[in-house]
Image 1 (cartoon, rainbow, N blue to C red):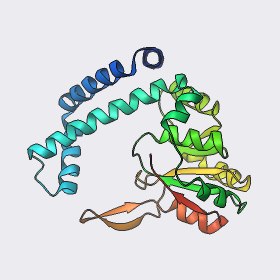
Image 2 (spheres, rainbow, N blue to C red):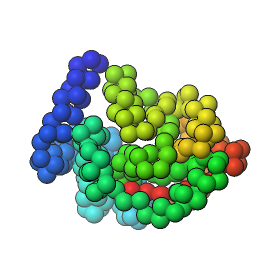
Image 3 (tube, rainbow, N blue to C red):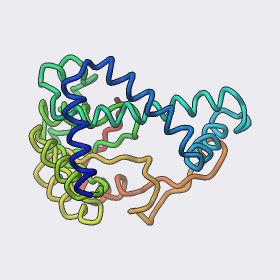
Length: 230
């Protein structure tokens, strides 16, 4: 586990100092390799995309989109590794908050704000920009292993006024953040692993369960909900 942590730190250093275009090329190569060496994950992804696209899992277009999704994920990992080296100037250049008046109106209610999104684009940078320019953001996050990597992620986000707390300890921290009129961030595409009151919805022709935690928290506290994506 210690070796994995230092390998991650080495990757972070390289991602922070090598040209971005080169890192994207390396990430794309790693994603393509992962597509071929992880057949179980590839199969599950193809079936999901086939459902969305209305095609067979063996369709060439489905396979092409699935390969690109693997590359997108490794690019995201590159972004996570590079995060400690992102400057405020780069954040201002890459992240624009559209309709900021909605954020201000929500904050002015003095009940905290619940910001909901999905793993679409780089939500890490979006959350940091909200925390830098408006109010602190508290996120419930998966407690990654090894612990050293999770601690590293927590420390680097804290530099930008973003607080990560583990899901299993989230309730108290999220309530405290709302009482302080801060932002609470939630992802609605995580299923119901930590939320047993999932809401069944029709999602691309199938019944899927989405977590109800954001709505329940808003109902309990009166905090407004803002939805967005990066």
